[in-house]
Amino acid sequence: MEQRLPKGSLGGQAVLEGIMMKGPGGYSTAVRLPDSKICVKFHKYKSYGEKYPVFKIPFIRGIANFVEALALGMKTLTYSSSFFEEDEEETKADRLFKDIFKDKAEDVLLGITVIISVVLALGLFMFIPAGIAELLGKWISNHFVLSLIEGIIRLGIFLAYVALIAQMEDIHRLFMYHGAEHKTINCYEAGDELKPENVKRHTRYHKRCGTSFIFFVMIVSIIVFMFITAEQMWLRFLLRLLLVPVVAGISYELIRMAGRSDSGFWRIISVPGMWVQKLTTREPDEDMIQVAIVAVEAVLYGKAYADAVNDAQGIVLPNAELEVDDLEGF
Image 1 (cartoon, rainbow, N blue to C red):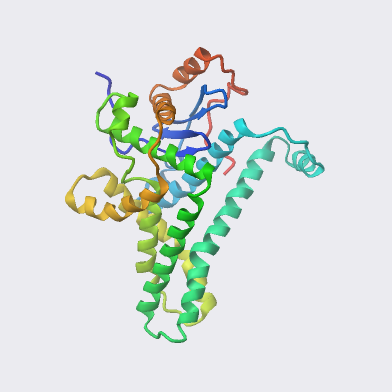
Image 2 (tube, rainbow, N blue to C red):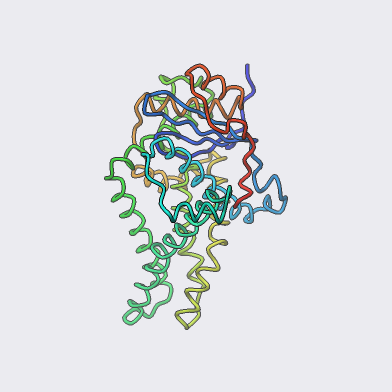
């Protein structure tokens, strides 16, 4: 009987018409191509914690894992979208960008995208709720009540945002792949054989999901931000910004414990995040489940397995020799 990875070792995310799975030592990206073939690529990988022991320290590791997940997620999402890009004429701006940054152009562009995404997220989920709370402060003097209202507004914006984008066809399919990812991990962690009929029986919700992490962030931020009592508005905004890593670190430790424990307490703690996953996951079809299975098995068996899957379908990947990817550009 094959030795299985410890519970909590597998994680991933949905990408465009596919799934990224990450495990000890590597990650894979499996994509359903327009011709219905499944293309899979495996990368050896060293996490920040493996390269720098300081990032294994509790609470600090949560910040490192968040940054790492964001960078890896954007990288694999860009990779999956490359299979569906229509041929477009290269503009002068494109050529100038490539001339300046040479072979680092793609990494630089990806880094800029990550920075813009973080700035927009901070504006939407932090500064707007804080600004509304500041306005309400003219009528509500209790600091703790205002902090609670700000947190509720932040959570409401997040839920409304997810519900709104879920109406888009591409996002709806992304959420179906998200469901396939969860079902497949749940199947593997339950000890069942990775077959579509087995995967289908498992739930599309998972305690270690990024959606649950965001929910924990929302709740923890309410508690942490209650201790900000500076009178100047700009200073309160600045302190909130500086405390984001603290909130992320605490939230990571909570979701990590919840994901590794089956006790009644942690199941109860995980319930609200699982409810939110009703918005960010959908029941997948069998084709999506097959993609998820290939992604998991590529992580389990490595590059030789990925190459065999591609060879059997006549798929030749460009730059197939690149098998080490440690996100040094980030």
